[in-house]
Length: 248
Image (cartoon, rainbow, N blue to C red; front, side):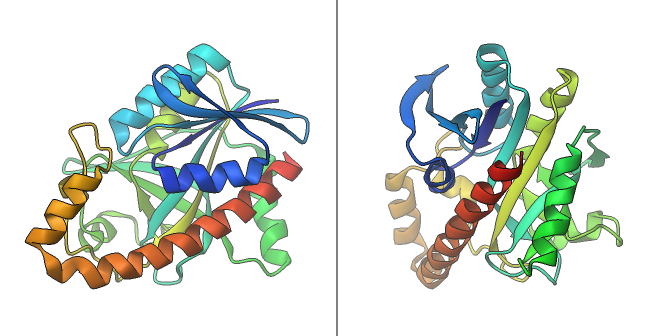
């Protein structure tokens, strides 16, 4: 099976590549990519950069150049459900886009094996959940986002890429899987905007990070805490991807 995996940030890419073992690094359509053979699958990981537009571009490149049998969105997310903790693994069983204009459900074909995977993992005592991925088209406070989602939404999380990937997968008749680990819980609101860390293409740039820290030194404790959370999320993402690839 040809599997295309799209990440947003370098930390997410490294976590996925660790799950693949030996991987060859190359460029695909101008984007950083990795290729590996594992468990009878041909896997290509593409790092898109953050945001809806970057995810759309990466998905188009993968579809055009790889013709995958399965598309995956993998990385970190923010918890919206009070039940989710840092490091918890969430597999998408529903997707919605959320913007100032409201929310729109994204129709998608998800392999039955993905749903069965969640059941098996929870039966084995793993903290894995089947949840709603809320893909925002712009950075939005969690409290505002939570108020826009259905009250009965199962284990909702927020991120900025999955719906874009799922839409293109659906348009091309390709099954989709979303796999994310929680890097910040429901009550962690950022004291800064990610826009301040990124260039116009929504890619984090160290000079912009340093400039923002110089202007807002009060965010340093939060950044330290989030860095620790990201290490936990990355380790659990690697493990979850290893287990998922073994059953696909």
